[in-house]
Image (cartoon, rainbow, N blue to C red; front, side, top):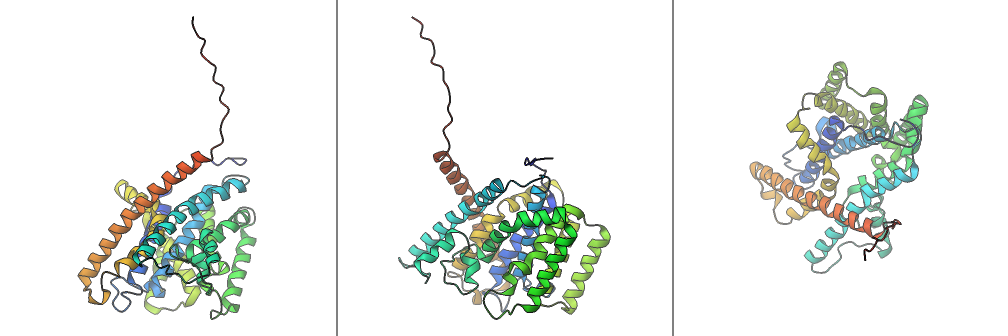
Length: 357
């Protein structure tokens, strides 16, 4: 494939597989925390790291892998087309979900705006950076989308540069990413400003690993899959890795493990289910946290037994599934409608039929 034309490539099952499982991990994270933190019904710190960190790590790796898979073949990346497609994939659904959630909260709270933030900071929500910057102590109207949304927008900004480096200078690019990572881990104080695990340089190894995997590795040999299992087992029993280093290495090992075992799940029924989960993963990501929070205003988590807690999780998942389905349908309809409004009129020459006397 040459030039700027990118041929549509077949879907890779393991990309959907990891994306779908990552979405479930994120839902479990906010179902457990902070409501059931004293008696969680799911493991809260698998392999010695926070379950949310594990889910985010998988999302980061799969984001790098998926973008590289889609855009690795073109000789030159069409930047205008790339950024336009990224904006269309992120913002319309986010804006619709943000408006819907805030209308609901406004009515639920008796006509009171809950967020205590300067009015101008709503612009941070418009550009999807509210959740990310809220972690640095900046007042925003953050309602949904988590910090990950703003972070992934930053990744989109630098992706063309990363893509160029991984394709043309993979060794040099890898060394530069490693140096930036080590410097951030060693020098950045976690007590000030943005938490270190939210910094781009801290998460670059995960993003880049996904890109390198798709570009050069492609499959997980049995020996590598087994090694990933051993590393995860040792970390689970000893908790030897700590902090951001643990998140990075455990995240990579867990990804390799998931890709390795995906070959045994790659069957049509599973493909259909995982494909649906992957298709709705962004919508799930947007709606799940508010759903869980609102349900816990009705249900007292302290009074839940184990069996009822699992039933509540199933109920939450059903609500999330319905709202995610609705959100995707509404977004598609709104985008199609607005597209028609701004569609350029084509000059169509219609020859008038000859009248017969």
